[in-house]
View 1 (tube, rainbow, N blue to C red):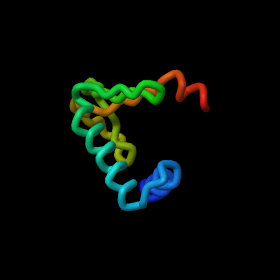
View 2: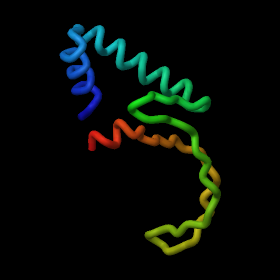
View 3: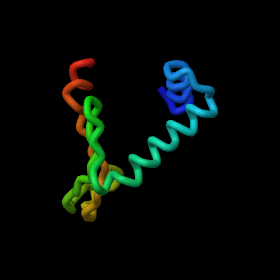
Length: 87
């Protein structure tokens, strides 16, 4: 499912126009993006948080040369139990 299909599904389930559903979906995604550093918990769905990755040594697959991969941050999603049970 892509973003347009998600908007269409939200519009259908909520009885909204596609324009209103687009505004709702965009607002939801923006709010999650802006608050991920603090942590976002959606009970029954899951939680979004920031995880730190340690620096490490990698290997260039073309040349076999070792390269240094710097530490970085990434977004981690942990599904809630109610969401897991639907799978």
